[in-house]
Image (spheres, one colour):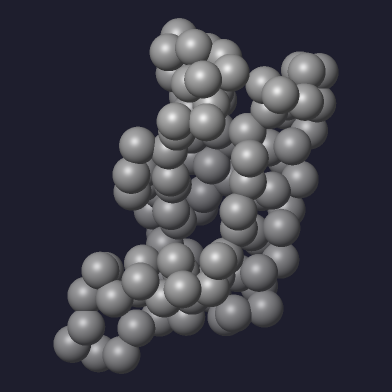
Length: 105
C-alpha cells in the first residue's frame, strides 16, 4: 500500500503485488478463492477447511511470501499480516467476515 509505494515506487509496488497474488493463486485449490480486498490486501476463502488447517495454510503462505522477497533489501519487502476468521453465521455476508479478520489484527 502507501508504505510500499514510498519505498519502491509505483512500478515496484505493482511488481510486489503481482508476485504476492501469483503465490496465493498458485497455492489455492480449485475449491478455494483468492481475491484482492483492498489496494494492498488479499484474502482467500478456504471452503471445507477447519480453523487449524486454515491457520497452518496461512502461516505456510506467509513463509512462501517472505522467502520470495528474501533477496530484497528489508525496506523493499512486503509487510505481512496474516489472520484467519471462521465462517460467518448463515445469513451474514463477506463484509462481516472481513470485519472479523480486521478485528483480529
